[in-house]
Amino acid sequence: MDHLQILDGYFNDEGKFERMPGKRQKKKLEAMLNFLATKFEVGTQYTEVQVNEIINQYTVFKDPATLRRLMWGSKLIKRTLDGTAYWRE
Image (cartoon, rainbow, N blue to C red):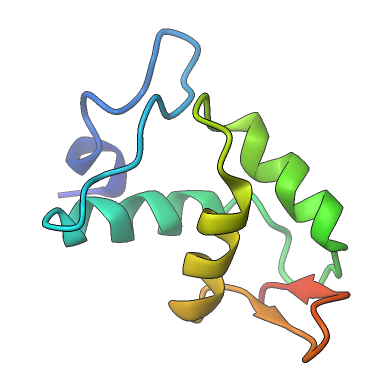
């Protein structure tokens, strides 16, 4: 099953996430994070503001800080120790 099938029901008519999967829905959360990670170009560095802007393009609930931290914690994106630069390998 691909990421989009797992996330059926989480997208609105505009193709944005309406809500974040709950804590018990680990596979759905992983699928959402993987989907968002694909929106970052490999090898390109982004500022925290840029990362938030990209995440907000795909969400209605506007919680980029949580999603950014979860993507970093899942090792989908990397960052400098001080958080000034983010990238995808």
